[in-house]
Image (cartoon, rainbow, N blue to C red; front, side, top):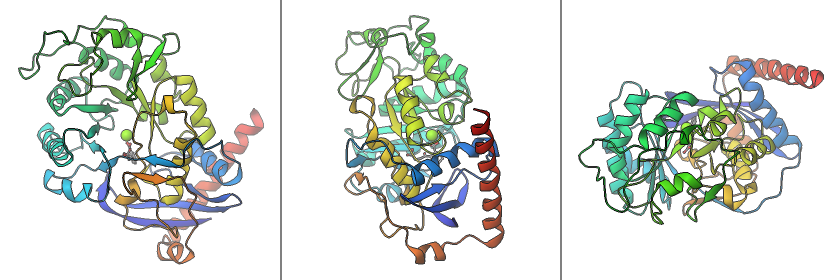
Length: 384
Ligand SMILES: O=C(O)CCC(=O)c1ccccc1C(=O)O
Ligand SMILES: [Mg+2]
């Protein structure tokens, strides 16, 4: 095991140096990189993932290249084009919003710049990391809806808030720039759609990956072209991220009908097979994303995305984030090229492991954490 500390090119979630423990395992390199503030119980799932990827055969690959989104940190609008340039060929962008200390005006300016830079055909998503209250999310997402968002990721923190937000967004708002009426108008929510069981209701996935219950799509007034039109139901699709990867029950959000799609990450969900199992049981389309991993962790995410059936993949994945790091540890970096990344397990570069070696006290901290998390996993196995 080696511990590395890689500077970020732009602060991301306040992170200026990304630390990771890297295993040189029998099946290739594997990564353990839970954020330092996560407790051992939460971090144990990340270790399970690292051990699984390094020591066990992975499920069959259904594709050999994964389309990725550009990830735009909560930078000032003036910096947007510089960030987008690091994601050559990407036709989808995910923009961080609701950053602490910033305003909705900052978010609007950033998203406007992304939409202008990428053009009307691009898909633009936002990720609030649970930073809005329901009221703030309603206001922000109504304001942002003019930019034709692909979805809003974790606008509020809890499953209950997401469910209520989703219901409220299905009702036409008073915003003057929102056209109501016409054959493609947004119908008021049927009331219980947010509580509908994801498992019980038949789900349909449109050819662009948009999914919803029969009733939800019917509520869109038989619209065959929701994307690109100004009116839609709901105003914006809701994606769950933290409500999947940090929840005691990753399926609760799907069961509550509180999200239209899920963001799944291999490490926090305990590995590729565990993540695939969750996705199958949730029955919602998904986007695979990273946690700002090195190319080793990205490789794990690419293998998860490659194992997903087409019907469950909802567009470009958030796996282009090596572009946000100022270094890497593999011979070849898994950076976006022509909008995608080949599914590979890159070899470690010994000289880079040395160059980015973490200071001794951080190395010791990570070794102790691995030891504690491993003991938790062993204890769990003993009890099972
Ligand atoms: O999904 C992406 O585009 C990149 C990954 C990303 O946003 C992320 C990276 C580290 C920690 C949290 C998140 C997140 O999706 O919230
Ligand atoms: Mg997210």
